[in-house]
Image (cartoon, rainbow, N blue to C red; front, side, top):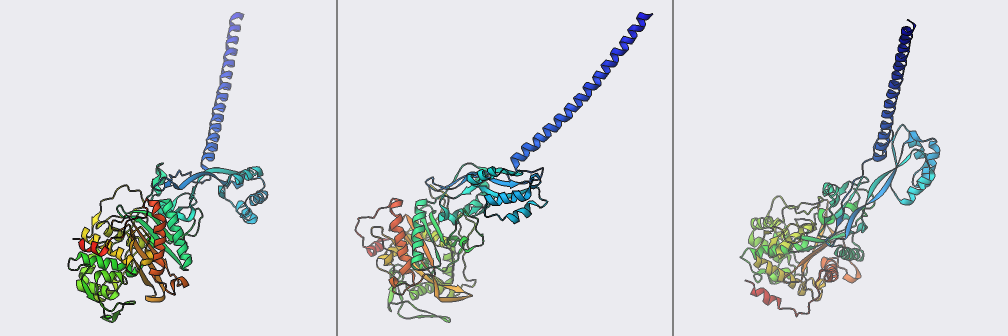
Length: 550
């Protein structure tokens, strides 16, 4: 009996102990699981915050953007991104906000201590302090040892050549997003691909053109200017300058005048450079030859306008002489001979009335009269009443000189010509090449001559308009040319904004005295860079060559 009772008591006790142990183990297991979940969650929050620049689930630093390089045609870096760090604060983590503000102002003198104290004292949980710190600044912040200060790895867009390619590149904002120029146009491409974008621009040519244009603006006290160099056979732009310019490394005001790209965004009346279009129209018509004569003895009355020549010859002039002596009267006679409808159609056919653009979004459409009257046809014949951008001017001239094949202009590297469009015959193209050369050797543009380069071209001066009225004391002075004739490889166009007369120009401020010699300086400097050395060949009889063209 006692044995049975004892066994029963032992069994009861053992089972109670087992149950107690099981309950303790269950409690411990639950505690461990809950604690583990808590630890894991804390770790996730800490890692997430560390990666994304977040304070206590308040956010907001943007993620780092890896942006591809932009290089010139020779592989020289034009734009690149460098690793950097940015500093932000989590005010709620700070022990002494006043001390923190004081230490921040010590590291960054441009930050006002009182302003920073107010910002840190606000209810904000996240606050940017400084973007893109230098290594020295980063170390100084670390030395201060302020709780609640954190670093975020970022990138900074860098332009080694500073102002040199400002209007082409454009720039990015503080978050490395393209806001102008090619940086804006190719923003998605640059962010999604590691492959650099290769441009048609040659940095060496760009530097030479920039330098010569700058010197010309200073010499003639101009307000600014623009210049473009183009490869005729492909439409590739080797250099494009607009002055004044800006440093894309700095966050300047997007609306500042320096941001305006005169080379692509301006609409400028071309003045006498437009006589090249008028002459081309005459030759392409098949009714007029370089030796056809027009009466330029007297001023021409058209409606309420009277057309005069500057230092006119007072005689009959051939088409070759009309261009060479830049006769407004002769040009007007050509336009009236062919008629306004013919002129408008021709200008449309060669692309002058369309919008010409390259990869930049900053472009300007052509301005021309809605009603194309006889008076409009006359003024357009010598470059007034129609306005276009420098890019449009050089593109159309290059198309005419490219045996009559027009290519779209491009800032991207192009090894071969694209699918061009014929705008004039090869015969007309060959004739105009020689006429442009004669304009330099015998005409009003002798200052554009560069020995051994057989430069051909035409200058043009146009009065600027203000409130619908022409200003006698303010003009644009331009020159468009190509070399070496009669098989030119490169074209050049430049324009000066309100150049002034100097003792060197004998009181003149017209393009033949300022734009033409500037073009000569550019060609002389870039010729050897382009692999074209001065020729030792004797000058041919250009008029005889002109007669041979059939």
